[in-house]
Image 1 (cartoon, rainbow, N blue to C red):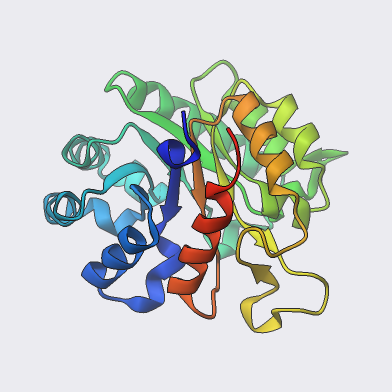
Image 2 (image 1 turned 90 degrees about the horizontal axis):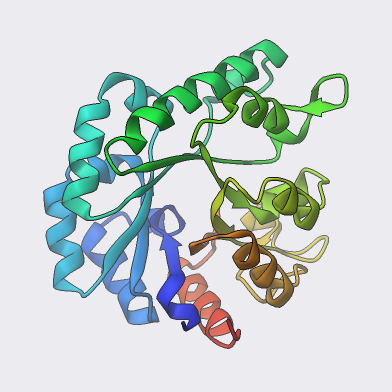
Length: 255
């Protein structure tokens, strides 16, 4: 299996291009065959599917908000079927909830586990996507991310490991990915610029041009069970260049 068979790109990376046709033309032109959609794309799944088909693209997965999971699960399931995807990830809690106490994170994990059970019955896997704030201790030494997975228990809740955010949270990504390898189904592939560089991009970098060893981290994620490796940059100066440069680097990695 080649790298490009499991490589996707999170369309959030190109959001500043605004026009979906331009975004999809850009990622297809860069060489990608798969994309990870954002929650708003699920609201117009048929239209998005047509645009993907026209460019020979497929949806690998999608992010979806907690509010949407709670309020319109049936609509989400139908959108997933329309787009032909079976992996969903809740990307973040709202800003006002990111400093909540341990009980709040436990409640979130329990609820996500229950939703994951219901979605699994529809052939869809639901997971959580981390940032760095879930690495803060909330219950003694236990972090919010640990509390989420602990509260999810034996449910089928999965994990999209955002490796660079783990590093920014001062965690060892290899240790965390190994610890929760039974939940890993995808990873976000992003890079961190050397200290003091790319400050206009919040310190992020195109994959392969930063400080993370993605040749090694790719292997770590894949060996843990990541089915999809999803390129992302949270604030690229030039989204098209980021898409091209990241693809070019990752294509050189032997799987």
